[in-house]
Length: 420
Image (cartoon, rainbow, N blue to C red; front, side, top):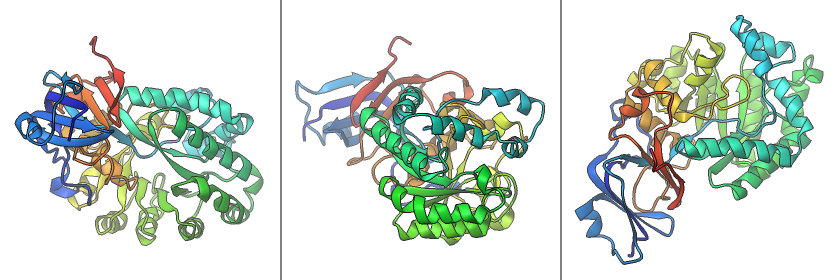
């Protein structure tokens, strides 16, 4: 078959062999490196990967083939950000000083700040407003090498505005190149009028929001936490979502060990996210399951909690780990997944190879997309990030800058920083 694009002379991290199962335990960090590698692309998909000789033996090179010498740079799958709140309106820098003074996040939330402040902003915005602001963030993510992003709702907290967020995600999926995975998070916080009767809001989510949101969503998520949604309430919502054909996700054990991880495993959730306070029973449950632990060290860093998810214990016990930004307007306002990779090393104790696997193949598993993205293998989408570095350790080591040289989505070159 004819190659339309041929990348040569790269250090190619294929992440091959894990499309049917995530990397875990001693497998985490198996990058499948081809030291002097090549990648052939046609019709938006990967045609062949390997040494140049191996690739040339499998594909036809014609005068129309674009050949790109990447100069020994690191070639990886497009990065995957599997937990974000990218579609919202406004920002919350007004709360920054409160947090710097040590005010706990839950206290800000109780006072009408936090998520509820973003709800106020988002309700006042139009679909066009949401699309305009979110498109800027998605462009930044793309510039940092991210080609697939999970996008949650959760700043509407009523049917009209939750659907408005989903409509914005739908428009963004068409109007800009980053792949979007829509997640309904109507149970993100309890609106003020339901504070004394949260079960009534749960009923609203199940009976009114979910049937309509399911038409535009891939997953359903719930903020299962003390002072938000209990394990029993979360179970009710997620079971209803499952009946409607949605995959399940869960904000779990972020502020206290509430049993969220165990609930995620019980219901067969694709991922349990945050997990700062997960207990040993929760870790054991995750280790014996297919549920991915999506860790969000940027949130701990920004909230100055001093507490991070016990990644090394999870790894030792066989939990499958992914990393994500948790980009949102309050607890982690950054689109920089490369920074999260650094925090994965410094704060979670993972190696550079492990964090790269956690933001590619394992992150793809956290979105049930590992058969299409997350590794460089024939037949998969040609989502490719090339870094201006010759090894994977340099990315988290030289932190705070953008290492991207080029980014391709479905074989199209969308970012080029060749003047580096």
